[in-house]
Amino acid sequence: MTDPQMILGQARYGPVPPDWRVFTKRRGRLSGFLHGTSHDPDPLLVITPEGAVEYANEHKPPVIVAFYDLAGIELQVRGQSSSDSSMVSISVWIDLYYRDGGKAKWRSASFASDMQAVQGFIEAWGAYRACGGR
Image (tube, rainbow, N blue to C red; front, top):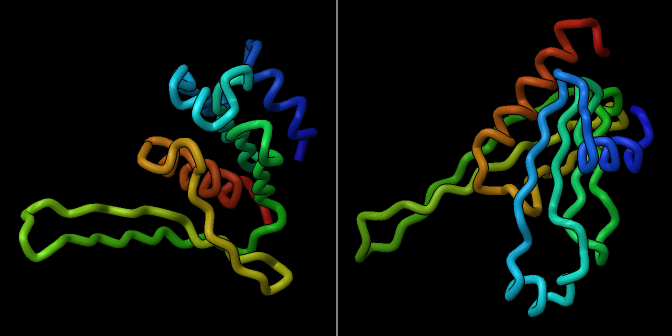
């Protein structure tokens, strides 16, 4: 995978290749103040043909998922409701199965409820595999 810091910088300042998916959102002033990140760049998730890189804030290193490290992925969805409500809370994540036998859970720190981000990750993985990725 290309240098993750280069990917984040290019996505932040543009232009980006047409096969990248870039997700960003403004960090609210109150949220930034309360979490000590008011001077921090906004959250950023970049999905490339080689994997995903996410910057949440300066307190955490970027999360990097390189597709060449993966043996497979599996979409997971869990719904939960309380007995006195007709509302259902949905939680979505992707189980990552690594070539070395390890397993991890991927859920975007800043875009967990953005189903387009999850869909973009799955589509990029599928394209990677279809183009001869291990």
